[in-house]
Image 1 (spheres, one colour):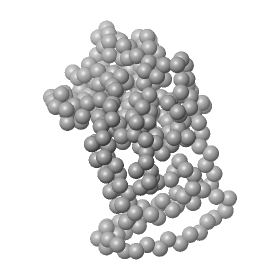
Image 2: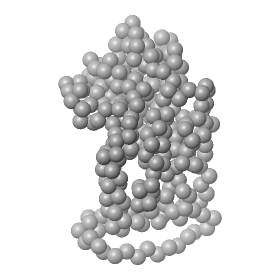
Image 3: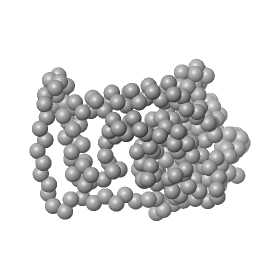
Image 4: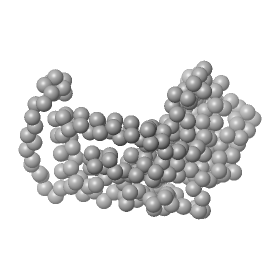
Length: 272
């Protein structure tokens, strides 16, 4: 571990290419924060954008670690860990926190996130589609949501990246592609930098933990440097390699009138 001069910061590059930055602090003696980030997000998937936008929801509904949520909660009883993942416009991210005593469990969860095989479950998928359809119906009845959608459409010239999903999108998105994309988005450790901040153990204890739980994570995507997501273009290796969004604002002010029926008086009153 190479230590930083100004702060108690150290860095480690594992055998699989994952870069880990550790910062020890006594700000909270019962907490360790975890954040991981890699370049490349939804803009890499523009040919399959509609499927990619549902990928995180599909993976979450099936259990992002390959284990149903209820079963995972039972397995982690008495262990203080939390872990989430997200794919946004230009990056993929991991966020979590744990107690110092449960750091090994947290690292094991992150390892499983990178290696878990999530299999399609038609019953869970049907439940997810029903929930998404219900949300779209609620949004359609919300005048504030309709106003915001119109403003976004005008400001972005109806760019497909910013279009709200439709019932047709919910009905037709490719769940198998989404699960494969969600797996591959978090399938290459060398693309990520992992940052640990908090009441960390000393280097002699921490380094073997990192090597055991994170250094053993294989490259699930394969194909060498910059290998592409399945059907989603090449994975960018730096911040200037990400696929940009070609969004242009209107050249001049645009005016539109939005008329809406008062379908739910109580909801409208609350929004106003």
